Amino acid sequence: MTLEPNNEENNDLSGFKYAWYKKAEYHINIKSYLTLGTGKANQTEIEQDWTLLPGEYNHITVESSSQRYIQSDGQMQPFYEILEKINKATEVVKLSLNTDKSINEVTNKNEILSKWEEIKKDLHFFELVKESYKTFIQIYDKEFNNIDRNIGRNLLYQIMFYPLPVFAGGSFTDEIPLRTTLSTLFPGEELIYSSAYGISKNEEGGYTVKLDGKSKGNESRFENIYQDKYQRTLGNPLEYKYAIEGEYIYNEDSVLSEIIFHVKEELNEKMIYVCRYHVRLNKK
Image 1 (cartoon, rainbow, N blue to C red):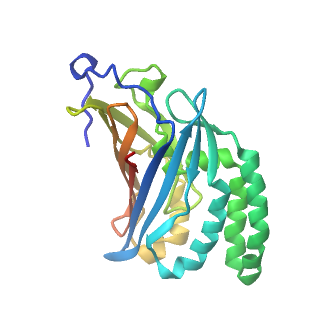
Image 2: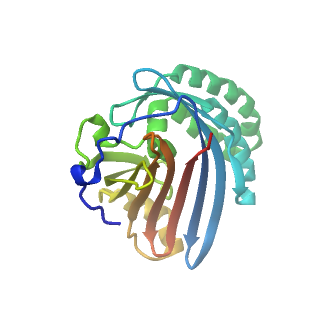
Image 3: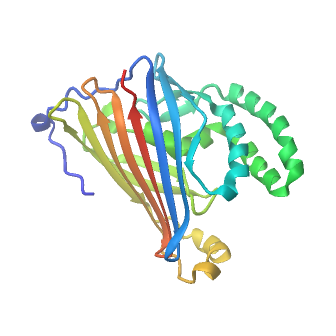
């Protein structure tokens, strides 16, 4: 996708403001597909609901429902059950936002950590059952003890609170600051990507924001991980690519009403991960 420069006068974008409804409910559908060789390795589809409750001075509360697995790998079911328990710690996340709409920090981190400590007691049973569960839980323990990073790197939160420089007083054609997220194919590893956006006014009212981005080419450190975990199975050398493509629809009140966001992470032609996020404002 190639973004065209905006012309503020011609497109009449002066009415594009940063607005939320007092209580907005969003339906979220996440569909992912992983290829291995010439076939499918895994396919999942998850649904979830978020309620956004804006507060004063760029504060907002996110209340999330349990995830519903529409399609999933049956072998992963035990881990999904544990993950459902883990996610209860972040059913309510309170955020302070920067002026560009991105996340500044989690303001109820102590409350989340307290919930997590209680959940860990329940999960100790699983740790005793299987060693791999213990490792899984230990990973999340580290994440909860660095909750600002965890939420900030979480791609769903990044998508919902994508930084648009126009909200911070920039022009409509400014590039978005570099973003850091977590790799799916190299679990636990961070990657940096750049993105740019364009805004247009819709004939029926409201605005459309289109953006695209790609990794900054700083993935040379992935070479050793690839050789250890994938080289023998895939055979081909690492040809890493990461790309995003998104479309945001804002209604006549300048409130976010729909997002369609695609992510593609590729090791080479034999292993490709594609994920689509579809976020939709529930009608009142």
